[in-house]
Length: 124
Image 1 (cartoon, rainbow, N blue to C red):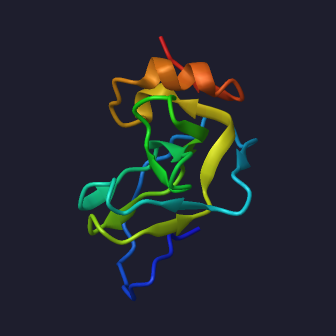
Image 2 (image 1 turned 90 degrees about the vertical axis):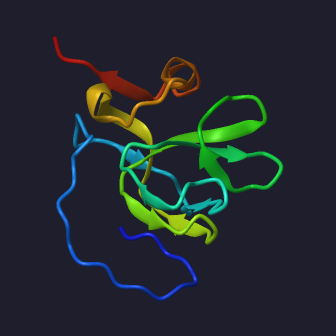
């Protein structure tokens, strides 16, 4: 599912990575509006950890659970201009993902604590 914004654009197909460790998963209902000012300009990678800001109602990259709810993982990547909001539907709230394929995030341990329905698979 593509990301939607009010800007018209077209991008060529490019290969991506698969973070899914299972075909059984659940996406967020109704989609998630990403706060364009909170994501840096450039590519927002598949596997980015996000959370809804309880004040603005928009999703931001996960850093802490305080002041946030509705935690999820993006299952698509998108190109951000650093200002425009995006609406995405492929936000994983339940399922299994490969931990090693997620973008580096120092707050992963905190994220795991607030997402008991997401299983993080590691390989030895």
